[in-house]
Length: 196
Image (tube, rainbow, N blue to C red):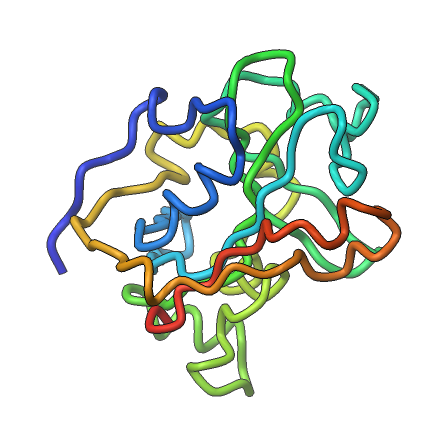
């Protein structure tokens, strides 16, 4: 596995979170921790963003202690605890002051498989990181990663040069946001059908 180009701040900056959600398909997520290094190819994402998105934690420009990372300039991690059980990883995108991010919903593990197997036992490899909570468990991501710069040496994203054809991308409504009224049906989930 050859190292790809590490993404720059500009790669995270876009006024359109859907554009970034599609962009991150085929990119490599890398986490280097004291336990070891884990990496994998992103194959499922969801876009959240703008004060008008009723499914976004920053809806109505609500800025709280929990959501303050969403209002940072793109290129930082927004990690939160969901349902009192799971951690979820988002890449903050866009300009400072605009709450938008991309939820990382699925990754195909490439590197650090023994460590991921230990973290995700007894599940088979195809289920190691096929959901947003599973991604965090596989990579060892918790609230200590909230606010971590995605341009550093702890948690980052690389472009390995993979081209994801449009015909292999399934675009659907987001999962678990039925409360978001008209925003629940918007096709803001992106799945690379050959990616995992």
